[in-house]
Length: 310
Image (cartoon, rainbow, N blue to C red; front, side, top):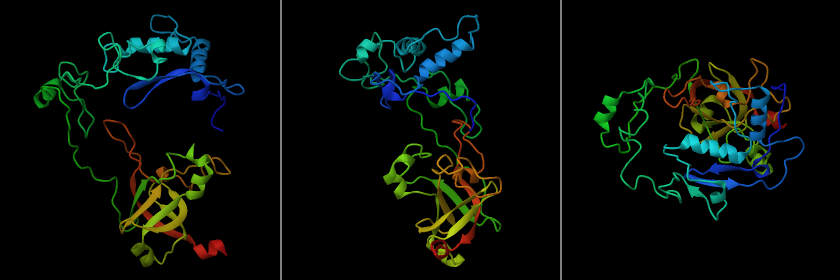
């Protein structure tokens, strides 16, 4: 519903390429089966698209000068040369061995590197690092003189971030502090876990968790249908009496609209089910990660649990 053209892409078992684990181990994944229908490896799609659009580099040459996955890997090796994640010693032939290989893999370390910094040299050293960090509040780059003064030998530098106030505090109009988070049964927006019947049965819908003392004070009970409203939007879900502290509300952020009958968000002014729609837009000045975490909120009863089941 959001695209004029859909280009179906192959999954991991339907294409050849490399992937790298969090421990720096590079693996080669060979194509096992053909992709179904018109699906193609995403690399093929990108290369074909670049050719059809006649993309060029600043010298007028074709922007993409490789075709298959091994050629793309060779291009990536050239990009990685001399950097911490140096792949220049890796080849598809070497990766077809019995196990993966950890970068950096170079002429000096042809079998990869099990442990980094064993020689006492760190890429954080002032003579080797590419940047000197940023101010954790403003995001402004820091200078070389400052960096050399606090980290002259280039060891790991742990910098405390100052406490920053929440976006907003509860007030008489919005008396609760809403916080968003996870449930054990789902991952992110459930595009995978939402298709596993056992996980869907365990956590089928968004809910609102409240402290029992707050529920008693407001005359609310387990399973009541409620609206959570903030200055940004509203969400509707069933109430759970839980272990959150008094004055707080918890809502899991996994639920969106891809698996709803309409397949999209409700009309403006209608409560939805996506928790991130309730919180202000704010992001970390250094990492640029969105906060999507907290807001002042109010709670409204929509329907009693016994009325829902009657």
